[in-house]
Length: 257
Ligand code: PGA
Image (tube, rainbow, N blue to C red; front, top):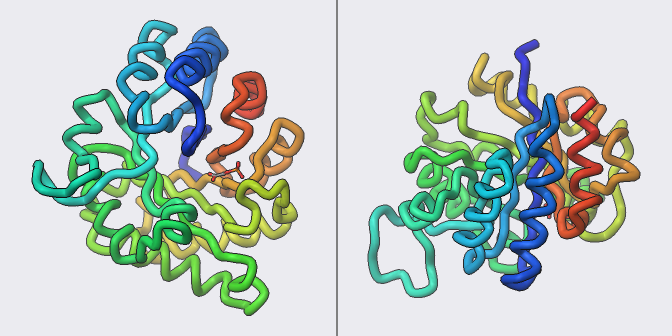
């Protein structure tokens, strides 16, 4: 089995103030700066705080990467009011970008096709793409879990050049587990991650085997070790618990033996 460097991502969503974002970034960065064998740690602050958080992360050891929660897919610059480009993100020191987070799919109405465009744009810009997939409770109850995840994976990675696959990270996040405190059983996570891994290997061969595959949805210090210990789980995308430095660090420490 290829060695896959674990990733712990902190998705801050529409939370923090300028001051609290800087303080959180400093605490997270200080918490991992001396760790001997750390996972890759990435935080995803709101757009307005990217520059400041990036500067704080650099000042506090430079071991935490800067991520963005979204991006617009059009290349270059242009008349897209309210949108942010890959060039702008790179200019701010961003290295990782989320695509297809369930809140963007289900609250903002992003289609599979749009998510695919964003994923390709992120990768074309040389950035790492964290492609989020996951079924709703209705879809799960209707027996559509595999089909939904397969469809989102296909559309999300449609047309991605082979050379870019090493920068793809998949986050499996069952929508019903996000922000609810509910988590799938370890057996459910094992089954879904096995299914997604097989789909990636069938499609991309060795590149699919090397891709990091994260779990997301109500990951907390109390359940991190169990969830992150599941076969084919290469880390976590953390929402609520990433807003408290100690909790986020405790989750990251599941990988710092
Ligand atoms: P949560 O969010 O940890 O608050 O459930 C996870 C996510 O949305 O990535």
